[in-house]
Amino acid sequence: MSELIVTLVTDAGPIGIGEAHGPFLSQGGAESMKAVGQILERVTPLVVGQDPFAVERIWQDLFALTYTSVRGIPTLASQRRQLVTAMSAIDIALWDLMGKATGKPVHALLGGALRSRVPAYVTGFYYRDGERAEDLLREVRTLVAESLVDYLIIDSTWAGGLTTWRKAAVMTELYGVPLAAHHDPQIHVHAVAASPTGFILESFADPSRDPLWFELFAERPQIIDGFMAVPDAPGLGLELRHDTLEKYGVRLQ
Image (cartoon, rainbow, N blue to C red):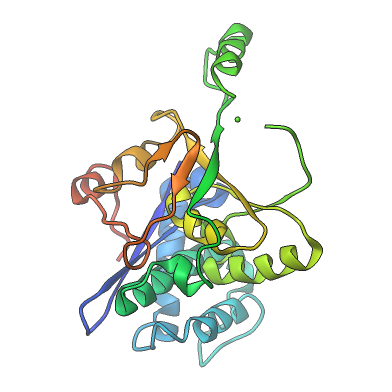
């Protein structure tokens, strides 16, 4: 599992934190991270110096690079996956910045929390080398995770940020489709809480599956009795652990 961390520093002081991930990063390893780092350098002129409250305009400029040139930056049509990964982290960092600048949690910026806590399902059943059928059966017996329903699952860290989530949330409300979140519950708790059809979060019970969830934050949100409380701290309410960044991280810029 690889995770891209982007921090946006403002001249006013607040620092925005954004995250992105996906199969592109996980499967490509260091080379994929290097490619995304190059994309971040190329799109910097579309982000640095901008008002973070112009998040929709910034998102539109970045997304437009998937098919055309924007303000002198050549199109990145052949590197769409790398671009969307980069813009996911940038967009989430902008939402974090807006929250910190206003002293409000991100869910308040998304329209306000419609619930005080959000249910979370646990992810499991990942094959490991040497695993046997009885090992999987043992895991099944230890997890509860739910009846199948028709729903839409979105990952803002993979699909273009919280701005993309907001667009999907409008569509799911229109059609009455339950909206679930994939990965990064510390970000998606804000999005699910503020979505009329917000349904459930993904969570991680196994540190070997995703050590970053357990080690990346100074104080990560807790899941109690299958629910994560909706945070009330400004922005995403997250603080990175620099020792974890030093332990696992590779600086791209």
